[in-house]
Image (cartoon, rainbow, N blue to C red; front, side):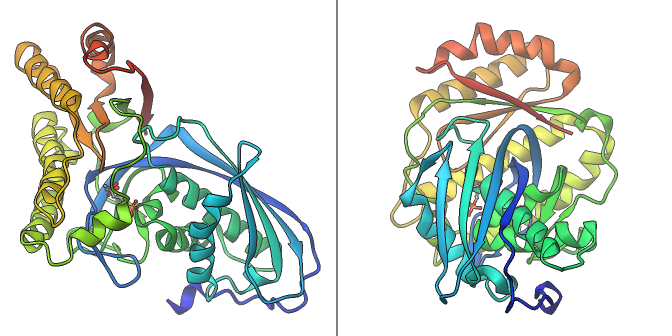
Length: 351
Ligand code: PMV
């Protein structure tokens, strides 16, 4: 971890200014659920980084004298006092690696291109964008991180803010968590997926159905905590590792049916963990199940490659290849849209 400690002398910083960065959210195919120590995952995960759903952050810095962390967070121009504690905790965790954090008072101005509580992880894109701002600032203050070092450090930092955020630093398929199946993989930062990927998975579509726009019932911090002492935890971590291993040849040969089986199994395993923890939760809503049944029926009737995944909530991510997007868009608009109350959706894709 020594490599991530900034070498710049932070004692005489008088500069004031701003840096900015943009970072997209991601959707996991192999899910991270369960962690130990400080943000170390219990199993490796793979995700697609999205394109349209991103956070833009401007980090303003102004030198100061005292030894406190001082920051204010603004979302779309409005001060968000309730956002500050999570970012202060993040700054405390990363201070060792970014020693100038107490030398400035910061204003963090963020904007998300996607709606709040949409099942798109704004913590991933937000922590990712802020981490990219911080490595940018390090270089502006005299650091000399090269482009690849900047991304690696940003991924390392983002992990300490929100685990899955470390995967958002890279576009496309990304892996986080040490596994013998991915050379160069690490528990400390994400790496771009290194193996061959079939063209079926290029510009892969993710249409997110906003089944439930309410506040998250279970925060991911609580959710990860529920895996400690969970009766099926060991089997789940092993199953994620096995699913990841099986996914590698599938991503290479383009077998969409096999891909769907793994991805849906992962989503349902995540929810099964929540249904069987103490306390237990059902995060799907009746309309989540209605949509899932319609997807399965559609697949049976048309043989078209439409699959779903879920995060720790009720919203459904529809996953499908670009070549089938017209027919599937028709099915979404004609059938799926009427299965849930809001009828709202966010269309995105990944390279
Ligand atoms: O990064 P966190 O702590 O918000 O956890 C995210 C967990 C899931 O989104 C449910 C799965 C994943 O791998 O992204």
